[in-house]
Image 1 (cartoon, rainbow, N blue to C red):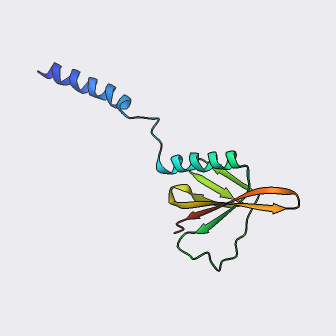
Image 2 (image 1 turned 90 degrees about the vertical axis):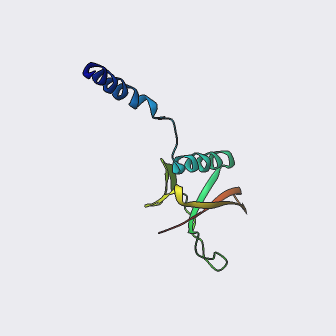
Image 3 (image 1 turned 45 degrees about the vertical axis):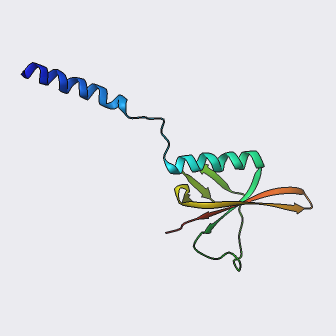
Length: 111
């Protein structure tokens, strides 16, 4: 009986690591993939992060060209934001003298 128990424990301990799905994405990683896909597809050149809990009707928005999606975070200048807190995004198109540019606003729950 003791031998069966030892074999059973060994079998479970060997099978346990393989039962976890390592390809499963977190919510933040899934959102980051979507945001990155939109950035690449639309050719986003400027990005702004806004607090989703604040009305943007009267808010001055500062955009940056220095941004990057890293893992489940987006870096804008020297600040990092967790994309798992993304509420929505918005694409805007400018008609500057240099040509049409795509800008992106990320509305994130900032804590």
